[in-house]
Image (cartoon, rainbow, N blue to C red; front, side):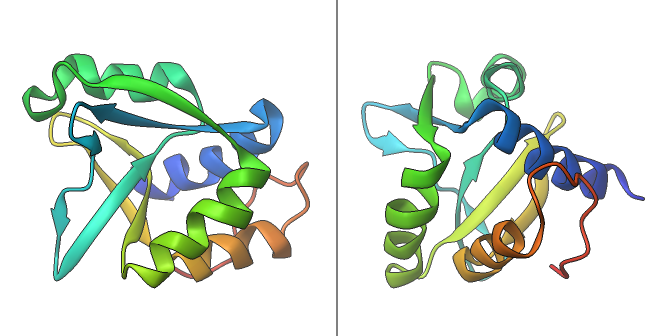
Length: 125
């Protein structure tokens, strides 16, 4: 499994355990950098993962970590991202804050298909 794949599997397992997902924002709102042909809003499964990116990636210095209830995120935030044509970044990491970028529909399906106690991912990105 690639490092990004490991972060993706950890996201599903940890988000269920935490009951929250975490993003980062500054005075302009949530981070939403360009990725490929679109934009992605990054989310992490633990506040420490998000905080590490804020500390280590120059572009995100000064951002604050914000928590969102998983059910609210799945039911309210993801449909909004889908309407806006946004992707969802999953547990980005490293000096360039990279990882999986999924459509909101893929993320919702992934949560519907896999029981919370199963950290193994079988969904295709």
